[in-house]
Amino acid sequence: MTPLRVGVVGLHYAAATHLPVYAALAREGIVELAAVATAHRETADEAARTHGVPRAHVGFEALCADPGVDLVDVATRPSRHAAMVGAALGAGKHVLCEAPLARSTEEGLEMAATADAAGRVAAVDMQSRFWPGLAELRRRVQDGWIGRVDNVAVQAFYPTFTNPAAVRGSGWCADAAHGASSLRVHGLHTADIVRWVFGDLGDVRGLVARRAPTWPGPDGPLPADSVDSAAWTARTADGALCSVHSSWVAPGGGGWRLVAHGAEGVLVAEAAGHTGHFPVRLSGARTGEETGELVAAEGTATEPFTRLVRTLVAHVADGAPAADLPTFADGVAALRIADAVDGGLTSVD
Figure 1 (cartoon, rainbow, N blue to C red):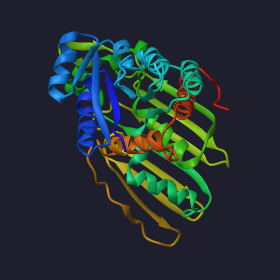
Figure 2 (cartoon, rainbow, N blue to C red; figure 1 turned 90 degrees about the vertical axis):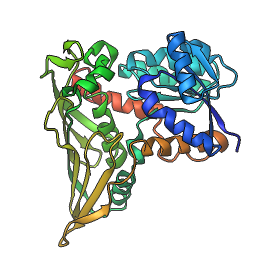
Figure 3 (cartoon, rainbow, N blue to C red; figure 1 turned 60 degrees about the vertical axis):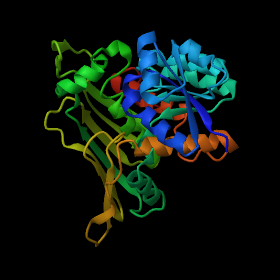
């Protein structure tokens, strides 16, 4: 198989997550890390030197026009995704876009339509699906291991932006204009997991809050106007009730926990932090049995992204089934939920 030639737009988040994965897969001959792009010559050149990338571009337009790139990985803040994805698709490239796909459902729909018209593979980096614990959760639910699903409850409390180091690296999340919030970043992964495991959701209703008006920035308190806490409910197509309560400014946050109660048993998925990077433990029991571990919480922070990229490469190379690869349609579905909770919609139906 000819390696898929990857160009990465954006540096900060990608430097610690995407670029090391591409470097490891390049050693296996699966991808070629061909180019990087940032907004400034000095940062682009430094990224290329640090990660051994042959070409450094200033601006996403130059990378999208690079004939030596097959796939553009857009690893920037949500407010920039639409223009970058549009340029990549317009240049005939496949696209992997960081989550959330866009700032709103409407913007996401336009991006999905562009991808369909271009006939290119377009995926969203909702990599939580690729933890073995969550894949096994989905398999057991779909196989009827707990019978009819009646209730699903999720709690996701993280201390992320009570930590000055996190604010220093991702302080832009404090500004709602960039399209980020606890609901639309960490929370969007949870929304996707619930949809992926239990099916499409309807009757979505919720509340959002801005409980921390400032975050501990490196130069003093940083004003924050993005949503930091959210609570919402929904109903699956066959009537199960779902509830999700999350925050990324919870100092004593206990991590992520999903409990699915069925007519014939229970399944519990747990992670010490955001499911995009923390391994998921699955336990469960059928009626009359004691709860036991089904899948251990094992794996590195980049393991789910590595699996996503392997699936994406196989799909691009030979048209293999996309399997659990999150599509732009999935990205739009998650945005519909976020918009409903934010008050932009009364329902995702």
